[in-house]
Length: 385
Image 1: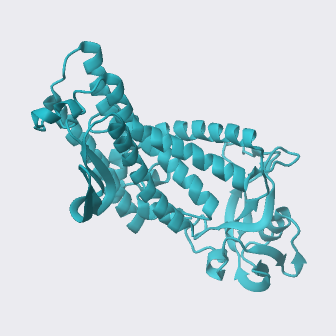
Image 2 (image 1 turned 45 degrees about the vertical axis):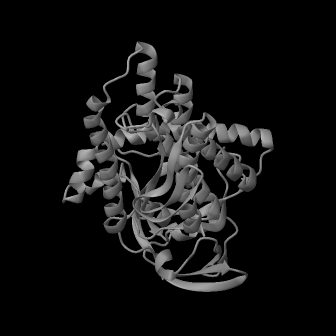
Image 3 (image 1 turned 90 degrees about the vertical axis):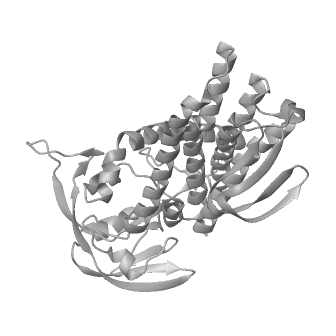
């Protein structure tokens, strides 16, 4: 279900972005001749009024054609007054920034909906979240890269762990204690799925983990973390949640928006700064960089989509990142169009847009490369869950 939510959400994100540009332009009397989802050859279209709407073959975006937005476009004299280029600065600003605003509005709405409908993690006496015995996610592999016992046994998100070798599991602490103390052992883990108890015979993996005392990692005389040998099953728990009121949910959504914007700015900078290393990882370089920064395509987004609530949060983060990307004041991004309009307003002169074409080609090429790299990595070096 989560994968479907993500796919539909990405398509709607594109439609809403272009629809925001379109609505703003039409509200100001500008003429929009085309509004398409996708690029390339036209698969289907229809005309209503002066605008052709439709779907193109490559579903990697969309566009709205507003006359006069392309400075090299020839426009009939009787339509010149309806062009983007003759509009005042504030109208141009609204039109080009409407797409960015749409992402931020959608992201805030998604954060609010998830908070109000699904709640927020409940905190225990220690101030930390309270885990349940219900499985939230299943690791595909162990830290050593081997198939995890849970994945091999067919454990699914939503399963509830009820017993380990005949001992009832009342809390997540009971389960972790039972598993950690039996590295490499064969155990029977009983799960409950849809009201039915299912016994699973598994051999626990053996891993090394840092020793933690009072929330702090213990280090040795050499400054390195002290480790211990423990058993590994490969699941993480759902957390107990509580639903806040509407006012509190608005505040939480605003906080999540701020954090998402900060993370997106850092993530975008890391993609730019480490672009060479990411490319190198494809051609036999150090894959460790991919654990820190990597582009992700819709293929990867669908793959990591979890339950509906986590998929909605994922879509919120994608919307924030796309908004941050479009703020960058470089042609042909929305921020680039705004920068040109601002230059005209401040200087009173029209810029020579032809000089910006090399920048536009570089920016467009960079974005296309990120998309292609993301698709390649999501197919051949997918994120391990």
